[in-house]
Structures are given as C-alpha cells and as structure tokens.
Image: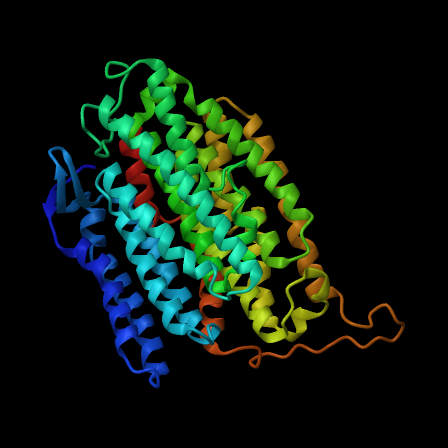
Length: 501
C-alpha cells in the first residue's frame, strides 16, 4: 500500500490484550462473577481501542509491522497491519466487543470457560487479520479452530457435541489441505510466502497445471470456513447448537476468516493478471453462484430460526467470493464491503434469535406468532436487518448488491445480476414470513373476536442484551446512508481496491 511501513508493537499488544482478560477470568475467585464478566467486556473494549489507535496512520496509507519469530531462513512469523488486514481487524474487534457485552447476560453457566475461549479466539483471529504472510496466517487460522470449538459445544447437549465433532473433522481436514497448499506455494515461489500487491506466483515460477493445483488447494482449504458448497456441512449444525453470541461470531467473523483467506490468495498471492491468465475466476464464480442459490433454497425449508439463519449465512458469504471472481473494481469493492455489511446484519439477526430464546424459549419460526408484540424492540431490529438482507435501500445490504451488480456489468457478465435478483427474492421468501408471523399473527387469531395483543416496550430483556442488537440494527441503516459521504469507513476499502486495480 502507498505510504511507509514502520516497526510497531501495537499489533502485538492488540493480540495480547485478550490474553490479559483470559488470565483475569481464571485468576479472580469464583464468587466474583460480576467482576470477571465485566473484565471480559473491558478487555474486548480495550482491544477495539488499540485497533482504533492505528486508524489515522492506516488512512494515510501507512502500515505497521513486527517480527515475532523465524522458523528457517525466509520463513518467519510476522505481523503487518496493512489496509486490508486493518479493515478485517476493525470489523472483528467491533463485533466481538458487542458480542461480549451481550454474553454477560446471556451466558449463565460455565462462564469462565466460555469467556476464556472467547478471548482466546479473538486473539487468534486478530493474528490472522494482521498476518504478514501465508505461514503466519495459517498458524493463527488453525489455532482459531481450536479456540472456537469450545464455543460451539458450550451447551454440552448431544446436538452440540455432534456439531462440535463435525466442525473439527471439517476444519482439521481443511487445515491439512491448506498445509499442502502452503508447502507447494513456498517451493514454487522460491520461498516467498509474503502478501504482495501483484502476487508472489507467476507463470515464470511454475507451470500452468501446478499453479492451478495450488489455487484450488487453497480454495478448498479456505472454502470450508467460507462455507462454499459442498464444503459447508458443518455450518447448519454448528450455528443452532452454539449459544447465540457464539453463533453471531461464527457467522459474522469466523466464516469471514475463510473468505478473507481467499481474498489474500486471489489478490496478494496470485494477483489479478495471473487470475485472468489461468481463467481461475470462472470456477470461483460458478461455485459462488451455486452456493448463493442452493443455500437460499435450503433456508426456505428450515423451521428452526437459527438453522434458517445459518443457511442464509452460507449463501451471503459467497457474495464476497462472487465479487472477487468478477475481477473488476466495483465487484471487488462490493465483495469486500459485504465482509463488514454481512457481519453487521447477520450478527444482529443471531443476537435477536438469542433474545427470543431467552425470553420465550422458542426456537421454531412456526411457534413465534405474535412475538413482535411481546418483544417489539427485538423484532423491529430483526425486521430492519432482514429487510437489509433482501437488499432494501438505504441499507448496507442494498449497497453490497448495487456494487456487485455494477461489477457484473463492468465485467460484461449480466448473468450475475440475475443471480443477485434470484437471491434477493429467495431472501424475501424466507425472511418475510418471519416478520409476518411476528407482527400479523397471534394466538387465537383464527377465531372470530380473537384479541390482538398489545405492544409492550421496555420490559423485554436486560439492556445488555438489547443494546448490542439496537446498535447493529441502527448501523445497518446508518452505514448504508454513509456510503454517499466520502471518507471513513469506505475509504479503507477503496484504498485496497485502487491499489489492486
């Protein structure tokens, strides 16, 4: 990126801060539950603050780096906060802070374990976001797998254990595939695993067949966490089994870690020119389109709310992959913006599902008649984000779809617009019935004279549950309007795209 690269310990501090929370959680006596939980929140808030402290320099085009260790010559663990890594780090640390606040009221048993692994997982994800090369990314990415597993099995039900086991099988298998991709990348790039703006591989360094093999091995390895079909099998089981704040992070951040890895491979390992020379974008686009449509169809058939949201996430994350495959400025811009947009929308939806479960015990959509009157703030926020997922203006969902559509026209492939329209219609088909059941149906409405329930505000849930939900719902609209004003936060993404293209 333009600007200067300078040594800084701040990236390391951001990664270590969650570990301070973890130590306090384990050290504070069991009787001090309130102290432990608020330390977790303050730790996540401090981590966000440290990440924000880098913003002025990042907006000026600077980057910050620190070497952690050397394994062999040319193979080192190094953190470098460039614009792309900062963007992902800012999104994940913000959502993590809100999910931590939410968890204080939501998690009512085995809090030490849950918050300890939550802090650990945030540290590993920040390490992946700030990784300077593929070796460092791989280390933190794989550690994140084992940090997130306890979050999935937290409830310790039979369903949670099965989901956790399935997650490990998928993730460890993907890690093995990634390892072979990195070994091949290291060998054929002459030992250069760093992320470079023009890529580190070329037809001069390896044959066409070898390069394609490396790419598809990377795509398969990262595609498991990015939930590209048919590598998505762990997602529909993990999201319903995990506690709602963990589901919000699984959908909003951990799925994005896979998509973020693919962004690094496409733009910083292979580069635009090599992607075009090898025609690799075609396969990516086909896989993304299949995932978007098929996942949306599966979502239609789910009565369990969190399972429906899980299938929705599978389709929505592939918007990012579709944007990358267009190899156009607007396509890349739309895909990268959707990384943050989807985190905001789906994070809110999963947190709303958690409020519904805590207050009513209901998991199935068919059981949620009149819930909009019982939980009006929650369901209004849910409706705002659901409409945004369909692409309703002026929401962030509309901005993503608009840029992706523009990118499709720029690429001369209007068929992608058809896919986006079909996806929007399917999203409406599986979200609108939830809103309808919540606000326009109630118990006894089939009987003549059945009394319509009254709206009851202010008593639906603890403020620590509601505040994160409201913040995300408001951001869904505010950030969508903000795109018309030049400057932060979109200047981060436009800087990345302008350099790549």
